[in-house]
Length: 348
Image 1 (cartoon, rainbow, N blue to C red):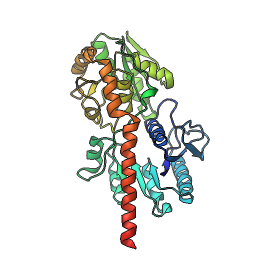
Image 2: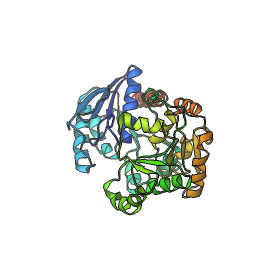
Image 3: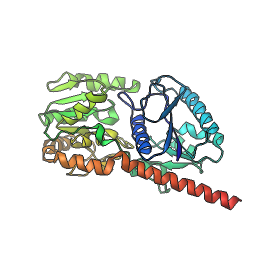
Image 4: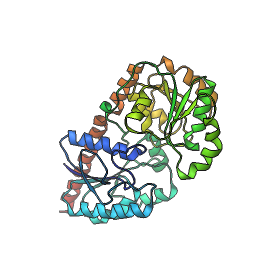
């Protein structure tokens, strides 16, 4: 199958550090190539994915700019229109406005955001688009009772070398933001009398939160701020941690860092919010507690040492490998193409 995958113009595939969408797309491209498919990735020129990469911008342009995104998408989908692709897989709402360029080439759109009233209205203008949710919670929030497929993300297990030896620090890894509960992670770890490493940076709109809530906590004993990390530095932090904290206070659509931790053999402790209850198997790959309850989070951290790290890795390989994810997307692509052929026959 000849597949066009359209990434963002903001970060390369795979990302050097931050970048959930780009990390997902790298795993999907690798899986499709392993399956024998012909994959063209429209991304940035500094991408290192194994797929054939075509680009307009030589490197990722961060922070996100909607005008840059429109420029990238317009160029990418005009190139797709001139090609002979069986299917095009997009990952940005703005891409849907260009679907008229594509004739009857089917479009699959993976959703990467939480509830947005304007986008929900916008999506109803595109009944021909094949939407995919990345968690059941995201689907419920965005589409309610409407039937769209849910395909959980997957990652490449061999990218994560696990450690089955219990670490000696709690890890917070991700964007530093109030909705991510960074302050809760630090407070709970200190209550549990365990050191915590904080890895990440705030986006521009969270700079005041960082200054007011996080910076004073970083000066407390046992709190080590390592900044934004990627590559082997990130993977080493994950596998050597005692536990990963994921105390989100918003409807996180997925949360790839949970899979990264589990594949590293590291259990996840966090709040029962967003997609977390779908990802964490209670007592097997981690513990989840009521949202906002820092004392309960502290207790969950304390008992994380009961999690068998080998079982944690094995469960993650079973549920969240890139091959499982690719198989489900490939089945969806086949179904979409069958539906197109049936529509063509009915039209004829």
